[in-house]
Image 1: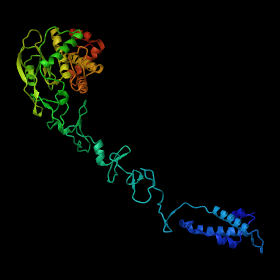
Image 2 (image 1 turned 120 degrees about the vertical axis):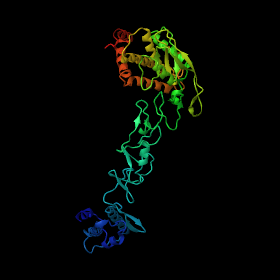
Image 3 (image 1 turned 90 degrees about the vertical axis):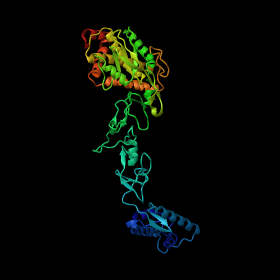
Length: 475
């Protein structure tokens, strides 16, 4: 206690020992016991009191007269009280007071901080998960924001989900039946997807009779009814908007194709009949041809050279209950051979851009026959015809991008109008273009890529002259 003694050394006003003990009493709540050091702290307080009292009497000789000056006594008492209070450093509260009795608050070894709200957890239930501690209400689902009380949960990055919420958000649903796509025997999610439309569906729908649109190839969702054409094909409602349904309706498109060829300095001199037909009539006409190449699995256009009688569609069908086509009128049309080409047949009920690309393809067959080209190999003839179909599609899409697709164009396509869904029709044109470019067949696919490369490198006119002379694409 030497430092306390030195602290009081030199004071001129001292308190009698009995006066000190009479005015300074220890507050039992001020020094609340604190674990194993409580006894030591009480002993220390007594030592402090004794040291103060002794120091006040240290320099006074025995028998000194007690100061009786009242004001001096008050001043000394205030000084002693200030010194005493300066030595009382209040420790941090470690106890809660209830009914004037100190009630200990339990703190476990180390504080637990909630990883959700970053506050101390304290008493009560808590979770020890993901290498952290959590209030139960802070461990909640990122999707529904409700606490996760299940024994199992799912994670996506740093986000927590109920298993059901995770499935709703991330588990793919079938675009056909709208159910969650099931897992395979290995526990993996297995589904099919269209390479262009990215339509996801259960593998079982490839074998359960789910119909596809004959134009865009998308599967029919169970909550949507496709249009049923008379020849058994199905047509989605989006493709129906711009579908060409009869021969008369196709004439503006036919004139546009003739203008397209004339712009390429490839004028078609003879008037070649154009007929829209059903699937059965097209297949019968194909069987009547001696020569020809046909795109499997289904032929959608033909350039005929033989005399035949063809059943053509005179009036478009109407669509009644269940979206079934009714009241379609057909009539026979006798083909007469006046030149190397007797007619061009196109499958009815296809969208305008698909019908036009098929017509551009078949018109190239007609042009080469009328120009006296030799009999060509399949890959060369079908390849160059696909190049012309691709060129016409590109021109249509470029026209749609440079003008308002809802109005008519001012170019050679001025007689053509876009359908009720111009944005979808443009997407549909991109799909038909993608079909030509990604065709894997040796005749139509490889033939197109070889012809397209030749035209890109040498131009269309030089490529055609090389084909006329050699029967092959230039390299």
